[in-house]
Image (cartoon, rainbow, N blue to C red):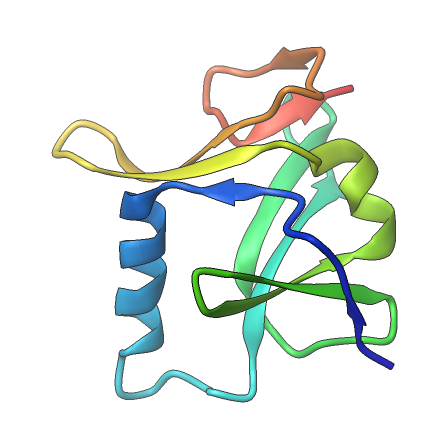
Length: 114
């Protein structure tokens, strides 16, 4: 059963543009949705997950600017209110995460502790 919720995270315009670019690649699997989440590991204890994946029965579903997204129900505790941005510069390229729930983050920007 799909559980639709209000978007727990925020994507900047540049992040949305990059996600749309990835979704328009010729080999993109349109059956997959954008997964936002966390997993154990990283130098601060938890690492962000942002990838395309198949939905599971543990997921909550939401939409951001027409992009179908999902998140494991238990992850909203760690990610609610987080902003995801895309940096396309020469020195720093990739998605960045600004998480108000993190008590500490590491230098790489993809790992955090709560």
